[in-house]
Length: 437
Image (cartoon, one colour):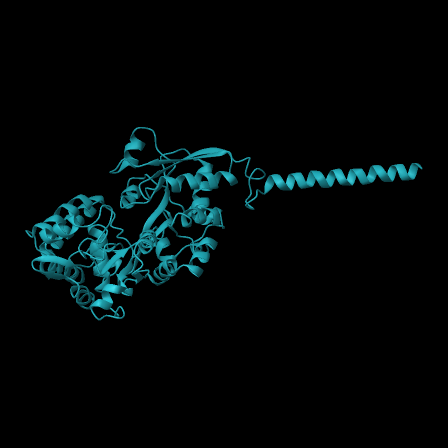
């Protein structure tokens, strides 16, 4: 009997150990399969992220909810920029965030010591490396000396060409032609700029208004054979905005507008559109361009709309990266947030489920969408075909105010010719760069 009694106690002991092991396992992995209340619950902190774009509050709520499933004791707070160089404002007031989304200010932030070089963090954390990201998106954050100052987060594949199939067929066009030059692109668009009895009855995209002045110039200069270094050579610290390839692109934009786009006729046409609509949705534009989230919405509203990528030579990647702010004391939780947002499947899913594109190549949610959604198939085409030499300008000074003001004189007032404008901007920007030496 003594032996049987000892055996029963032994069995009960084994069962208790198994149950305890099961409880421990369940506390480490939540329902989504993410580490949560176990190994990550001991990580505490408060991380503030200053953002300018995307301006989608529901996205940030989704991010916080998903992040806290894995890191329940790290408070993640998103702060919206109030415009201008708001990072400088917060730093000066002693309210600096821990992370900031990249913007055209990034080279200035580097020069002024406002953000941290990330190379030491990446060397200490082999899970974060350049192969995780779309190469052009990653390269945006590499300075000429090879130092890494940011990581890709939300990527804009620029751009999707949207066209109204019914309108094209009305004019005897059954497919979009190959367009490998400014001349070919312009020839395709101009056949849809139609005026009847003094009224504008059909249009396309407005080439001179392609998501902002600098984005416009970049897109068509790339189509004309320019590269990022045509604008600015970081090794020589030399500005070349008046390079003939760029001048010709701007001359194309100005000539197209002067020949085909009358502002008064356009105002009258736009006034006839239903409230909340647009020319492409109201069958008043044969062609338009968009980013991924817009295309998803447009094709739901107008079944005649089809889409493909813009001409290959024009493609480039924009978007928002993330930088770590240098003015803060070392916050270990900040790298955890940076890594999760940019390099984890859960972080990528939070973006992709909101119709934004993650800079992370391996993204199960993206792969699922690409497999069944033609819009995301085109998005993937742009991501994979955009050239390493086609990036947003990395000029290390802020010239946007002068550029945008003079752009108005060139495009809308006609008081400044393209070559004169680009000569002026080359001199203006070069002077700012020389002051930094």
